[in-house]
Image 1 (cartoon, one colour):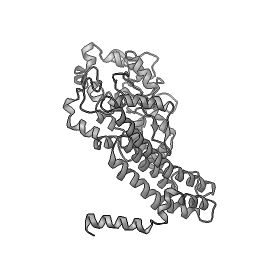
Image 2 (tube, rainbow, N blue to C red):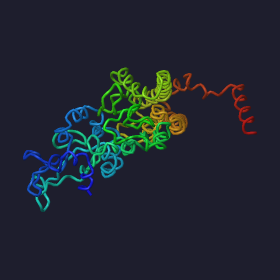
Image 3 (cartoon, helix red, strand yellow):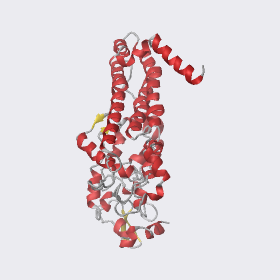
Length: 405
């Protein structure tokens, strides 16, 4: 299978064989003899850089290369501690990457199998995580996107590649893409996408639809290919409160240049107004107030330093990490159902029916009560005090006229 995949690859056509990628130096910690050749078990971006140095260097400075930093995050506490290490090893770390380690004997030597091959810690290998921390000091795994051993352009440009990691309740970009006009156009016109083309510029080599790679990585008429997937992103939608990234204006201009292959400047600018409004709504109506309440509860001694040992911490985590991200990401990718029903509806439902009631319960008799009351009295939440009679009647008339009841 591996040899057949290689035979069909561009590597095979230009004479790049096994040793060119897998060959090792005696100084490589994972090197071993195989059929008379010294080879390395893990092919890293440092190995790929022998031929693809500019791409490898660009990747090393990207956010993808830092994906393994989840190992010290709140998410990792949830995965490794609350759920258990095997859950994290088979789940989180397969996308984010691990710090690759060997197995050691009681004397401190690296363990080997009967053939003398070094044994890796199975909690860290096999792994093709995007931010894998390799033994040679490099980060990442090129095969995360360019699956070995065909390394096809077509595969790397396909949205399914990104969907290995970018899907699910907390970052459903694959699902959002498929419901968007972009995804619908791609899935209905895939045969027109020219995805094996050596160059792949929207509006030049294809015009049917964009994929993830189109917007975040591929060349335009004015920009080269980039392996820094965050280069065209102006907001970060990952944290509790979204923030504009450094050089956000130039980042946005780069993305607008991609959009201009298919859309007018007025269309693009108006989209960004809608998108910014949605992010600011989430930030100001839900995220900042929730953060203020959590801080007040901690100050009042109502939350312990240990994460996830209290109901409130689970509610708060899902509010921003799941529902809040879905709303923001849905707006960023023109996915209306994820913006609304999987997003802002779930945010509002959680905030008003779970988060606030639990906060009020915990805050009784403490200084946190005044913080919660002040937030509930803000204009964003005035509907809690009841809609005016005329507004209630207008709504009822609408439903009677439309549904006959």
